[in-house]
Image 1 (cartoon, helix red, strand yellow):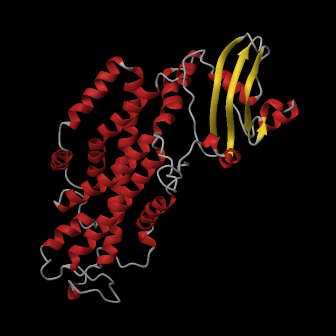
Image 2 (cartoon, one colour; image 1 turned 90 degrees about the horizontal axis):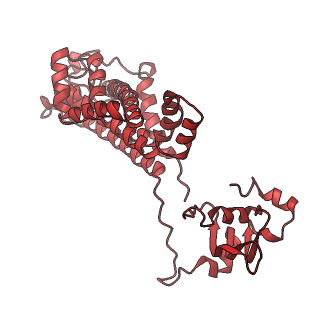
Image 3 (cartoon, one colour; image 1 turned 60 degrees about the horizontal axis):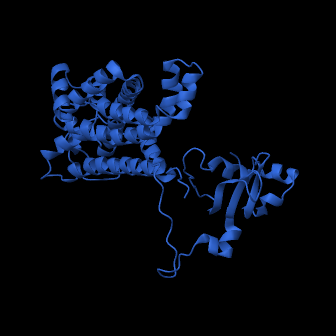
Length: 383
């Protein structure tokens, strides 16, 4: 089954970012403008979500608060992703001392709770966006490092990496041009997950008065301030909580969809209706034959004489439909390449099809002439 990009989830995230980005251009009241006469006013035509304890417009502060929270979250996550990916790729590829230094230092950082590290750093350097971004990045670096490191260990011995080494490519070129693009999938999932965590952590620090410094609006600040007046105007606590919850749900939904799209594990085939005995062999159903892109039955390939020659491939049967993936696994010399060459009509001299038939896109391959085979190659099949 084809895995599609989660456009709807992406659109919701993009909409959230766009609203925060264009906040200064929207016809909103200044988020720091106070109107003491209307403090804690209920929702009205002039202030759709009401006014807070200083008479400031709640809707304006929510939107500008999204601007603050998302700016901190995306910048800190991007910084953590760049540093963590670099450390993970270097440690996983070079091994030895770089690997030991990288992974042991990340283990030390992971032994401390993130919130305690953030509280310590903010207490030392003071609150504010300038402090918050590097502090959160420092906290999230180990996660990116471990994800990149695990990905590098998976691909570092692949043939395309060995080919780059054989061609004399420098280690730096192999790491950044060959390996890094092949571990970007898990890193993207980690990025989307960490952004939502950064929003929560920033709001928590702002709630404690150690995050975004006033008068810049922040959801955490709004929640903290609304606690003192919740008995008089409970809506002041409700609005920032809804904004924070919806944002996290949107981010996590996109993260889940992106993870599902990039997950390399095969998906189960859809169930066939008609009872427990309705699923029959695809080779036994003529309708399936017509839908198959590739259909092989009883294919036996002989090297040398058809009757007395060596037979490396015996009675191969398979049916492959549009959009399906099939892996043929076997040791060297088991006949995988010969099977593929037979499908392409490219069996070398002295190697012939002893029995069976091969249908590719509805055409009988062994009976096609050279011109017809060229029409199939590259368009319908390639190897």
